[in-house]
Length: 358
Image (cartoon, rainbow, N blue to C red; front, side):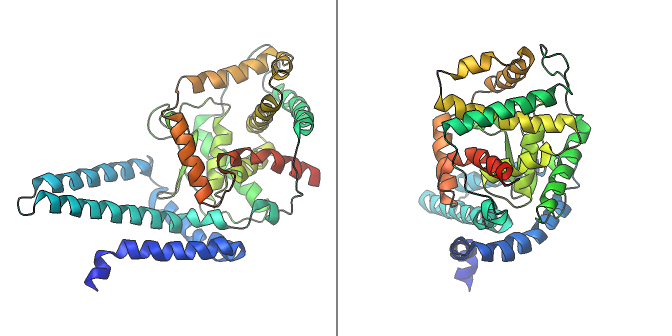
């Protein structure tokens, strides 16, 4: 019993990984038991514990991690009874058990959602594999859609949009749009995940992320440095994670559906603009020689919107970009997302399939 208590987190992790293997093998089981069951209670619990705080709970977790690390280091150098070798072994055991606890809790608090039934199956979406001609046709259609909507925000096509959605209303408005859309698709929407902008400008961008969902606090975080035209769609993406979706492409897709139906023109524009950018990236990759000529045909004001977005991103170059890409690519693959980082681009076939289904 003493040994079990000593290595509780290691045993708990092994049992968690065994359960995760079952969930991965039987997505329907995951969907009903965890995603639409256990996770609903977890979502309410996290909101009850952290949602009322006037500051991100991530700060508390970050401070706690520093405190734990300081204690671990202190235990190595301060003890006067044990040898240095024994102290190092004890510290190593604590680090390993701490890592076991983090991984196990990650799965129980949110990570099992990676193994739920795919969005394609749940919405009965047709299989779509767009080629370069399909991408160009979709981009042309999306260009007309986004430019027409843009006129409601900025009638002067030569000027960039210099307004922002009211900061004090952004979290509530975007969360409500996500709730309405997920409910319309018959997905549960328990609780009220918080939309936070922690730390300083560029903190997340420096690590290659516009936003991140924290499963240990239940908070949906975006970088405060993001251009106002990209904050709503990125927050909607993280809120979709907060409501139990792990797949990045799925969250991009659901975020787009949520905002493109909004009664707020600004929110609709951010969704259409984001999907336009996805299509434009795909077109530029398939036709690098033709893309500059296409971009030159766009109104000056729209090009200015794009330039302003990328200008902000350029202010915060990523640390260790290649390493981060490979690390997150392997992480996604370890969660059953075989395409890895390419999963983000899955939003294109998903939206095209949704439109095709009508």
